[in-house]
Length: 134
Image 1 (tube, rainbow, N blue to C red):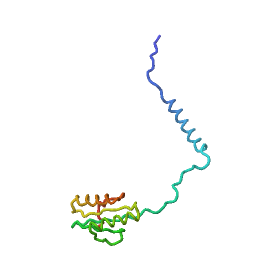
Image 2 (tube, rainbow, N blue to C red):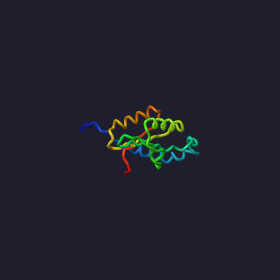
Image 3 (cartoon, rainbow, N blue to C red):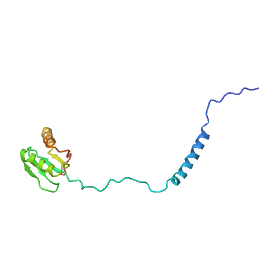
Image 4 (cartoon, helix red, strand yellow):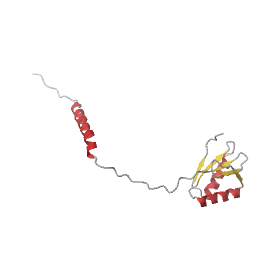
């Protein structure tokens, strides 16, 4: 008589069949379980629309100009007038964003100096313009 050898493999096909049947059952019954509407919390009404960024332009000759909006004309200012401009803008809106647009030929240290002046004035939102539209 011949001896039987033990089979050392597991047949997973029946397990896959059972899993597919369970998957189909759950897919069919899941929509039936949900009844009613889902309660989603609301954020409430917006207090005010976000303000447009004020633009600080640093020219190649290291002069500073400010623009209240992107469409307004640039106004050249001295360092003292620049600090006053920042203070007035922050008094009107403490969350006022600023955009620094520096000439590409300008030494980076001048841009860092302007960033430092803006930071010491108390500005929280400041960005750097990376490319000019010209």
